[in-house]
Image (tube, rainbow, N blue to C red; front, side, top):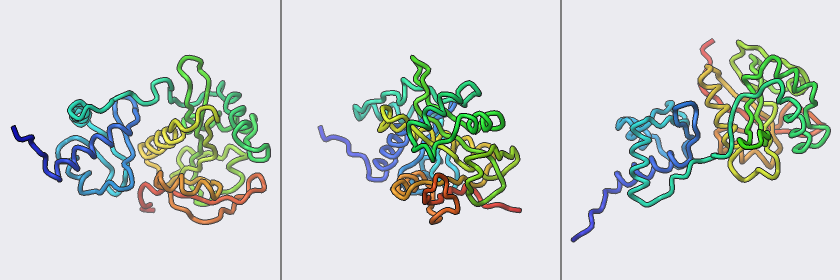
Length: 255
């Protein structure tokens, strides 16, 4: 019997859905993902018309619907591909005041002394902006192995003050990320990626416009893959270091 061969268009649709699903992360009962560079919007629009995904126009953020999840799982079974749950040994949650000590230790292990944020600085930031700090925690030991943190502001340029002081404006339309770190023993497991995607998802849901961060030149490519653009050298010289300023825009300001 001649084997049925699917059309090129259907193959692209199904493979795209499976890839989106396999690179997913969870937020409550929804499934989110960040589509890869070669995904075209025509394919995303087709998947959305079929009710399998919802996506923000002109963005690579995607929410997989219940129908899309079920379709992806059936396709994975059809293609005999693994559906192992990602990050099953980690919990991603908002930071709390008692987490300050572990976050400070993590900073000290991941950055030189002149760049690491102090315990006092982290405590002050958590006191006013704990909802803007997310930690990756080992479920069994409750050890914090990674974190990302930021503050809301209407400022549009990075400065050293954001690392030192708790300059947080709850009504601010922009986000300044002041830390992203993962313990060396837990790297290369996509934890930093997961933390960033969770942060971006939450900030978009809060109605923020833009996310800013600074990084070393050798990390520019890493953040570009997440959707950030390079604005060149930053005015911030935190830790007597030359930084690149990166920006991700969710939507244009109307004011």
